[in-house]
Amino acid sequence: MIDLHTHSLMSDGVLLPSELVRRAEVAGYRYWAITDHADQSNLDHIVPRLAAVAEDLNRFNQIKLLPGIELTHVPPATIAPLAERARRLGARLIVVHGETIAEPVPPGTNRAAIDAGVHLLAHPGLITEEEVRLAAERGVYLEITSRKGHSLTNGHVARLARELGAQLVLDSDTHAPGDIVSLSQRDRIVQGAGLEAEALAQMDSAAIELFKRLSAG
Image (tube, rainbow, N blue to C red; front, side, top):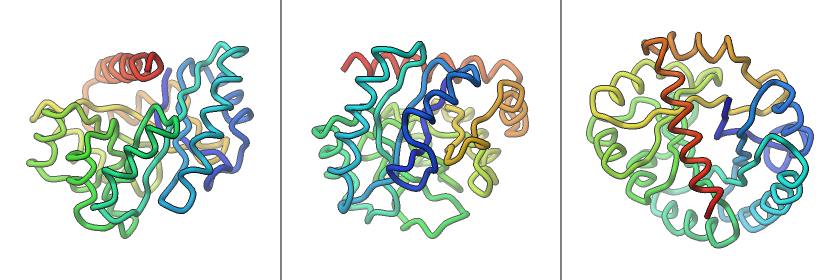
C-alpha cells in the first residue's frame, strides 16, 4: 500500500516522523510520504529536516519514506516560486492544498497548482472540467481522500478524472494514528467515490510509479 499525503508534528500532525512511519509500516504500507503544511514562514524549517529523517529511516526500514511538502492556503501567485524553492531545499514530492469545500482556500489555487506543475493536487473540491483536463495534460495527480470534510467531493473528482483522463491517487491526509487507513477501508473509499473495484489497484500502481520516479531524483 502507498500514501502520498500525511502530516507529522513538523506541522499539525501529532507524531514524530519516525513514529508515523513505523505505524504505517505495521499497518502494511510499503511506500509513505510526509507532506507537512508549509508556506513562506516555515518552508526552510520543515523540508531539510524531513529530507534528513527520510535518508536515515530509508537505510533501516523496509517501508520507504519520501520527503515532501504541502503548500497550504498560500496566495495562488506564490505557488510556483514556493514549489521551486521547496524542490531546491530537498522536497521530492510537491503537494498543494486544493480548493476543498471544507476550508476557505483562496480561489484560483487549483489552477495555479496545475499551471505550476506540482505533483499532486490534494482534495481539489469542486474542481472544474477545464482544470481536470489541464491536470491530465500536465501529469498532475488528483486526490481521492479519506479525510473528513475533504472527502465530500470525492465523487465529483473521480467522475471528472475518469471522463477526462486525469490520474487519481488515494490518500489519507493522516494527522494522527487513527487516520491511517486499512486495506479494507481503502477499497470501500474508492467504491464510495463511484469507482469500480479494480480502480484501487490502478491508482496504487500509478502512485508507486510516481514515488519511485521521485525517489530516484
